[in-house]
Amino acid sequence: MRHTDTLVRMALAARSGGAAAVRVNDPEVVAATVAAVDLPVIGLWKDGDSGVFITPTVRHALALVEAGATVVAADATARPRPDGSTFAALVEAVHAAGAQVMADVSTLGEGRAAAAQGADLIGTTLSGYVPGSPVQSAPDLALVTDLAGALDTPVIAEGRIATPEQAAQALAAGAHGVVVGTAITAPTALTRLFADALAPRP
Image (tube, rainbow, N blue to C red; front, side, top):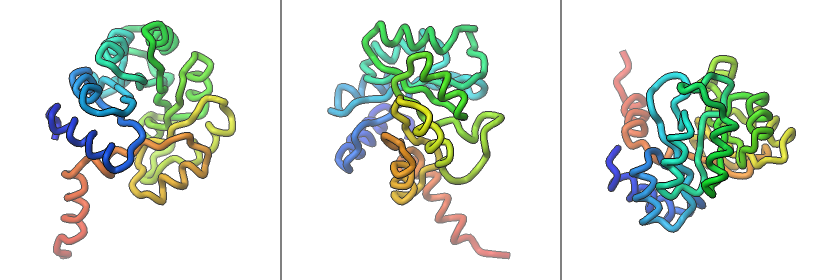
């Protein structure tokens, strides 16, 4: 599925289904999506597969702005960034370039810090994927509640939201919006759920 044309078609399908925005990985795909889909694009750039790899540097962030992203999503956890820069520097650069920043966090403390550094949106994206955050199979609605109660910055619920009911629960917990990923964009994972459920039992 990781072909630009396919991903743009998926974004178009999401728009047709009622999505208010799309979250898209890689500058090339961001640019193609911006050209084809009349929705705000939250852009990110995954570079690597460990540590801070969601839009890890200012260079990555500015490439997304240049590609047309309305919002740049970036790791805002307490972990060190690969080039030694700060999340605050990324926020400053993105704002200067005319876009907004969504801070992907894993804890309430990280959310508070990201808001203090100027993030425009706070996402629960990394809860369960960073040491110190709870590992669970369901959305971290407790974190949504805590962030929404503590911050004036809008909170975006993201991570393991598998059903419309869970999305509604996230809004009820105080989320401004909800990002749904695997549940609607990963045919391989969805097929595997059915295959596993129907596999013969020993």
